Amino acid sequence: MVNKSWLTEWIERGVPILMDGAMGTMLHAKGVGFDACFDELNLSRPEIVLEVHRAYAQAGAQILETNSFGANRYKLAAHGLEARVAEINAAAVALARQAAEDADHEVRVAGSVGPLGVRLAPFGRVQPQQARQAFREQIEALAGAGADAIVLETHGDLYEVREAVAAAREVCDLPLLASVTFTRDDRTLLGDTPTRVGRFLADLGVEVIGANCSSGPAQLLRVTRQMRQAAPGAHLLVMPNAGWPERVAQRIMYPATPDYFGDYALAFWREGANLVGGCCGTTPEHIAAMRAALDGAQGRPPPEVRVQEPRRRPSEPPEPGAEPTQLAQKLRQGHFVISVEVDPPRGFSIHKLQAGVHLLAEAGADVINVADSPMARMRMSPWAVCHLIQHDIGVEAVLHFPTRGRNLLRVQGDLLAAHALGVRNVFVVMGDPTAVGDYPEAMDDFDLVPSGLIKLIKHNFNSGVDHAGADIGGATSFFVGCALNLCSPDVEREIRVLRKKIHAGADFALTQPVFDSACARQFLSRYRERYGEPEIPLLVGVLPLYGARHAAFLHNEVPGIQIPEPVREAIRRAGDRAPKLGVRLAVDLLGELRGLVQGVYLMPPFSRYDMAAEIIEAVRQVKPSD
Image (cartoon, rainbow, N blue to C red):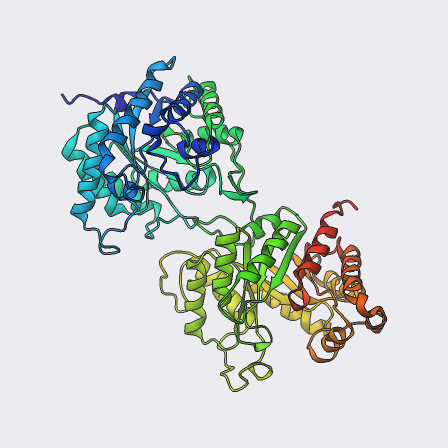
């Protein structure tokens, strides 16, 4: 008869085992900078590491993970500590063990082993045998110091996990837990799905498989469900982050509350999780809330827990494995959304643009629209700008995606590129003709009109196939906007085109600049007479006027823009005060349209982000009921 491990015996009790939460988050809260070597603190500041362990044990954790996540030779080498692998890992076990022995309930110690921090061949220069040796060195130290189990966590390369498992088998017979992290697309860093991960880890024969870190409980509930279906006989571990991190006043903040984690502890249990806990951003308070939720449910079958999911319109097809964008969520929840357009730089420096976006975000902008070669002028690719805005500043972006100048091959390749860069909101337009721009001789052809491109994105790419029906490796999760002119001289035609775009799958509309609320009201009134309320949210275009020449140019030379003569005259009379008047007129216009549209699409003139910020702040001061 094969003896069961202590971990298997605990799992067979039927109630999920509670792990601890984030070590790094707690150490940072105690004043340790992110550039420090957290693992080395086991030697130089053991008292604060012990304090964190004790807090998690007091919160009810049954397994404490050692402070050794990065204690391998490669990561320690960045701090000149590669010769102290054994010493640092042994100290990590000793500190966790001391906290476990001080607890008022039985607590076990799991040696934490994170990724090496280097790429394995063929994606890097580290050979598999070198990786195995590095893992062996760390795991041997953890096991030798008295760890009760080894947890391989936050890995993104399945083949690196395989080497870690092989190394552990060579040096100990402790229970092994293998956990992988996922990007917001429900893929590992190397593109593996939860289904593949579940099967791969189960085939390694480890005692527990699972997912940790990632973007939060909602995502890992979905991931857990897929892993359980792929490996129905496996024991499962779930340890999510406390939501997606945000930078607030130079601090990294996580939004998920302890109560939220308590609810999800039960949801994970219902999905078959055997071990639950927390990762980045979680605290002893989160673990205590999970403990209370699990204790309250003991003696009963796993409870049904209603976890709120974002609501979808009935007409929208599901997007498996993808969360709605922040823009989509805000529109569906009825928020008045503020979107601001920025132009990519003419060169390769984006410092001024980044400063402007920071100002807009601080003022209260929800999303940044990035134009694509406005007025057919040569500028940086908007995909790169969207990516940098989202990655470096943390504000969601909308990619303007013109059909003009792109054949069917380029359209699809560009969509895949945008998705790979994390851009999910796209605004489909025809684009400005090259004849008006820097290169009038440039090719101006196109294979798709905007409604055709919207249909390609929503019905093909978001279903996982290209224009020809070939598999693209998974469904994309684009949220698609279309253009609308509320003040079109041919209202009937504009309504027909809008209906066509809606039927193609458009999710929202951005309008041309409006300078007269009356024409917008007339358009919406005529639409309602025929079809009822618009089926998609409308963000009204607002372009604050900068001066008389600006107003004259827009009125006379830009198709689709009409500025009433009284407005132009008022701007002319304002002289040097025209920018201030332009802001006031924009705010007044929004006040007139606030109840008719779901948001505003601000277009700052001449990159005057300060004018946009002033409008945003004025709009934010108005309560929805006003």
